[in-house]
Each structure stands twice: as structure tokens, then as C-alpha cells.
Image: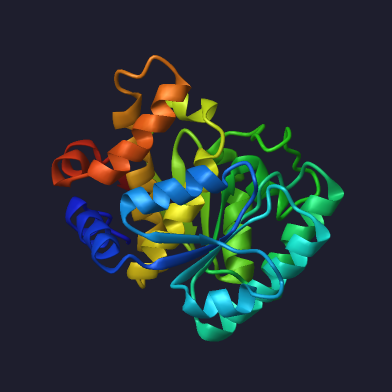
Amino acid sequence: MIHVTPDGILLSVEKIRETSPLIHNITNYVVMNTTANALLALGASPVMAHAIEEVRDMVSLARALVINLGTLSPSWVESAFSAVEEATARGIPVIIDPVGAGATPYRTKTFRDLIRAFSPTVIRGNASEVMALSTEAAKTKGVDSTNASHQALDAAFQLTEELGSVICISGETDYVIHNTTVTKIKNGHPMMQRVTGLGCTASALCGAFAAVQPDAVRAVAEAMAVMGIAGEIAAAGSPGPGTLQLRFIDVLYQLNETDITGLLNVEEGL
């Protein structure tokens, strides 16, 4: 069992703030600013580099690599494969966010090829995206899930068995799955679904936690808990998603032991 505790989360947050690990993001245009600000607010050091001429060099400096091809193109796909190959060779954690998998054949094939070529450390996506990685029947609506997170459990178990990766399904309840281990994170707020890029931000935070926590399952569970806790605090008193987005960054910056201890809502097992 993976026991996610307030003390463990706080220790990881303190390590991020103390060491400011470089997190290399090959991510989409929509979320670059939000993702970078969230990592900075938490204490990590973000870099967004996708040119094929430098991705391997940048990976060599990083403590984690996050791949998010929400606005994919052939050149970015080439860079992603090159970066993941380099990170895998160096033993650097790789987080794959299969944005919109299931929406189009090109997008779905790209992500399927990527995860099966390198077996990433972590795959984090919504239910429809996770299902699309393992079955032809799954479809997404643009980049939004058409399924509840629990509906992707079978697909997640298939993927972790095949690849050995930690699979994170985000939704009303977040599931972190590795082999037969299941951790449920029940933090968060419905208004978070109205802010573009927060799912992408979750993947970036998984990279930050994986940079300081060698147990990838624990790292992902801690990252998702922090994501949900920060969302709950940010939503309190926010009249709408615009305010929530601003407050979310502030909450990450100010996150403390009282917040984590008072709000953490995690269950082990199904």
C-alpha cells in the first residue's frame, strides 16, 4: 500500500522549494504560461523547450521531463520522441499527458506509439484519454473527457501491466494506479473544470514531485493531492473560474502544513 500522508506531502513540497528542480516541458501553446507559473509558484524551475536542436541538451539539465502535445505538429512529435529517448537513457522521470487522445487518429496514434516505444514513468490523463490509449472504442470530445474517471480503471490496469508505468486518471476522483495498487484522491472542486490547462498543470506538478520523490507512485499521488487541495482553497470565495485561476497560483505559493493536514482526502484501494 502507498500511504499518502500530510507529512510526506509537506516534505516533498519543502524539497521542491529548497532545490528548485528544473522541469523540462514540451507542452502546448494554450497552457505554457499557466504551467510555468504553477511550477514557479510551487518552487520548481520550469523550462519550455521544444526545438529538436536543443531538446536533448535541455533534458540533460532537467530533473524531470513532461510531454504534453495538446497542440501537436510533426516537428513537435519528433522533438518529443527525441527528448523521451534521452530522458529514458539518463534515468530521468518522464510524464506523458496524452491530451485529446481518442479525438483524431493522428493524435491517438502519436501517443500510443510514444508510450509503447519508451514505457514512460507516468501517464496522466482524463478517463477518455486513458481509455483511448488501450482501446479503439474510446472517444474524447476535443480534449474533454466523455467518461467518468472510474470508467477508465480497466484500461489503466491494462496499461500499467503492459508498460509498468504509473497511470493517473484525473476526474471528480483521481485514481493513481500501479500494478495492483490503487490510490484515490478526492480533493478538488468542480469549478476547476472551467479553467483551461489545469489538467496540464497537474501533469507538470507530477513532474515536480517526481523530481524530488523517487517513488513515482507516491510522487503522483502527492502531486494530485496538492493540485486538488489548492483548487479547493482557490475556489473558496471565487465568483468564477477567472478568479480561481489567479488564486490557484497564489495558493500554490502559500501552501502550508495547515492546508495539507486540514484538507487531504485520500483513500487506499478500490
